[in-house]
Length: 241
Length: 242
Image 1: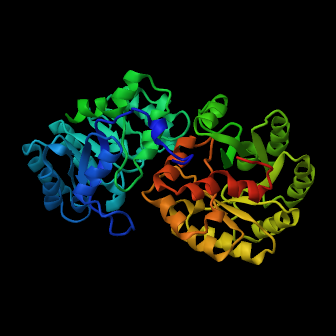
Image 2: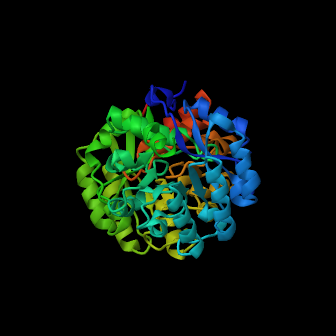
Image 3: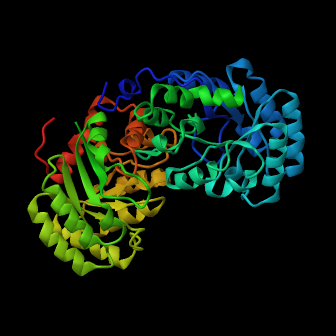
């Protein structure tokens, strides 16, 4: 054990559901291969009970086969369907297919797909998801990506909320009861303590980010035990089942 | 024992009231000593921030200071270095290239770094992406200069490896608000462990971020001790034993 041992600080905090997990690899990065087995092992190694898992194959290349890969993982994960915002027509077709298969959440990858918040496809997909009551997990800058979801009574988890932009999230979330944020980049000394605990979900982006960082920040936060339980999976279960 | 070589004192431009929690955060993560720059000096007015920090440091046994230098204001820099380094409470120089609009490769920053080398203290320089390579070049071109690449290039950590291997007077510290998988482990595997330091960017970023990123790297005991404090103590000439 070295001075940089995190286990004692994390203590007995257990995350029951991580809202930001991927299978697959980024072809433009030297990251891990993200095989389903290795991803599940990484979650288990950090005491994370389950993940809301989406497929990079679906996000970057072929939505149908990528999403089927996630659906085949069974009860070990909460399946999240990826859609391709570069193809709004195909995206809503895939959303219908996923909803019929019982999927309760879709995930958007605007940065990876080179899609901006003002593109018509984002609003089109947002309307479709909100109409079906699906939860949307979305990447992208929250200062821009709140707009396509506004006024739809949408349930959204912003996965890339950086603490630099937390004020913007808070002011839009005050008007949108369905807006939530991941903890992943909220690592200023008071960010987790500033967001209403019922709007906050533990997210790690395993295996492409270090899960211990948001875990350690949450474990050492000023949240009360019931708030910790909500952030560590209670809120995610409420949204995703 | 951990020495945090990249920390701050003073308010930020967000609604963020965290100064009171700073010491407890240091205690939580085993940070015994923190080397800080004044936020006012980094972001807006170097002389005013340095002056305020000097007064504050007089009452702080667990903090040492960086004299912040704005490369666009060499006369201020020269005066502040002369005033504050001899106090013993300031042990290095901080240069933020973005807030001062002074890239590492700019003439004014290279001149400022020459001034720092002359003063004989290390400089913590903000680096992002490939700019860490410019810092390595400045280091090679400036005899006696010792520099810490702040954030070790952030997302450009592959460049930081190249930079550290190019100049043996260039040190790396890891703080970054993102935690890409394997970032610290890859750097530690490719760079002389004598050149690795620990920094948090506190009070902007909670120490959990850098601590967790280093914990994830699973450093061996000897390397961990070098990163935690031994390298920093040697670099800054601190009389510290574990």
